[in-house]
Length: 374
Ligand code: NAP
Ligand code: G4F
Picture (cartoon, rainbow, N blue to C red):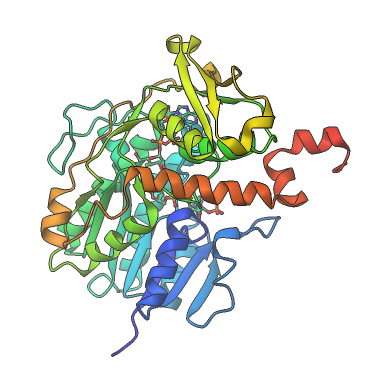
C-alpha cells in the first residue's frame, strides 16, 4: 500500500502531538509546521523528533508565501489545520492577531492548496469549535444548531467555518470542519481551566501552592479526551463525502464539579461556601497520606474577577449522534471521571519530578524569591 502524506499545522499543540502519533501509527508520512521561536521548546513532540516519517517545516499562519511553499514541497494527501491562537480569554486581548491566525489563516491554507493545483487530490480538515454556538440558542447542540459566536476567537473561527464551506461548494474541494467540543489531556495548555485545576490540585497536595484562583465556577462544558478526538479528525477525512461533524461526549459538567473531583483525586475533599464572586472551596478532609499537611479548614479555591471574561460561553453540551452513526466513532471511550483522574495522576507525577527549568516556567516568582533563578 502506498504511504499517505499528511501535513499538520499546529503540530506542537495538544491535538497536533496526539494526531502525529495517531497518523504515524497508521503508517503516514507526517509533516508539521512549527513557528520559529527564540526558545526551542517543543515538549509535546520531542519524543517524535528524529523518528522516520516525521518531518518539521518552519512556517506561520500569517505568512501566505511560506504556506504556499510548504504545501508545494510536501504535496500532502491530507491537511489537518489545527494551528490557532486557541485561548478564548487571550482573544479579547489580541483580537486582530486572533483574526489573522484563526480566520485569514484558514483562507491561506485553502489558497495554498489551490495555488499548488492540489484542490482535487488533497483533503482538508479544519479545527472548528463548539465556541461557534457561543450564547447558545439550543441545548444540546448539533450540526443544525444556529451559531452565535461570543468572543473574538469564536468570530474568527466562524469565518474559518464558512470559508471552508464556501471552498467546498465553489471549487468542489474535500474540506470539512470538525466542530469539536472541549477536549483535554495531560498535554493540555496550563492556562485552560481543566489543566490549571489539575496542576493546582497536585501542587497544593504536595505543599507547593497554597490557593487556586478561578473565574466562573458555574460554566458548563462537555469535556472529552483529546486522544479520542484526534481519531475523529482522521475519520472525517476518510468519509465518503466532505461533511461537517459535531464531536462531543454528550455529557455536561460544571467547572465547580471538575474542580471538586480533581481535588478529590489528589486526596483533598472540598466543601463550597458562598455564591458568585464570594464562593470558596474549603478543605473538609484529606486522605491519610496528607494528614500532616494542615489543610483541613483552609480555603483552597477562591473566585477572582481577573478570570471573568467580557462575554462568557456558559452552556456547551454537544450531541455527537451524527459522528456515532456515520463515522462509527465512540464518544464514550473515556469517561469524565477517567479524564479527570488521568490528568491529576499525570500532574501529581510531574509536580513530584519538577526540575528547575519546568518549575521556573510555572512558578518563576517563587524561584526568584528563593534566589535559584536570578
Ligand atoms: P493548542 O494546544 O493551543 O495548539 C495550538 C497550535 O497552533 C500550537 O502548535 C501553536 O504553535 C500553533 N500556532 C498558533 N499560532 C500559530 C501561528 N501564527 N502560526 C503557526 N502555528 C501557530 O491548541 P489545541 O488544543 O491543540 O487545539 C487545536 C485546534 O483545535 C485549534 O485550532 C483550536 O482552536 C481548536 N479547538 C480546540 C479545542 C480544544 O478543546 N482543545 C476545541 C475545539 C477546537 P506554538 O506551539 O508555537 O504556540
Ligand atoms: O478552559 P477554558 O479556557 O476553555 P474554553 O474557553 O471553553 O475554550 C476551549 O475550548 C473551546 C471549545 O469549546 C476551544 F475552541 C478553545 O480553543 C479552547 O480550547 O474555559 C472553560 C470555561 C470558561 O467558561 C471559563 O470562563 O471555564 C471558565 N473558567 C473559570 N475559571 C476559566 C477559569 N477558564 C480559564 N481558562 N481559567 C480560569 O481560571
